[in-house]
Length: 137
Image (cartoon, rainbow, N blue to C red; front, side, top):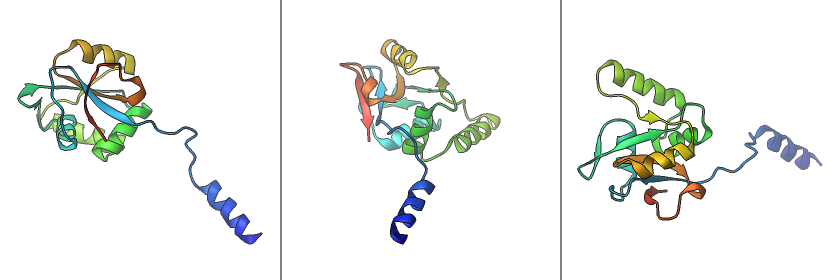
């Protein structure tokens, strides 16, 4: 009985998300080649502006979006506060601007499909047939 009570207490203390997180993949316009995690990290932190000598345009979802939070944690190992602070400093010292933001996954998919160099993260289930998946974990 005591063991069951302890188990119940532990279960109640563990945060419950209510929904499983879906895997995110990095998609890009067809002109960009496959890449690696280090390149994705450097691109989204403004340390590089191209992939394989081709200009790249990283796209983010807006702050507070659960997919953005998942991307920041899984790919950049940062939270929203750290990422925003990082870009605040970079912008202040003249080292670039943060990635462009789009309101929805659908908007991102349209932009990536029509813009050479566009790179973005989307849920694996939303990737259109024939899309250029350049990296997945």
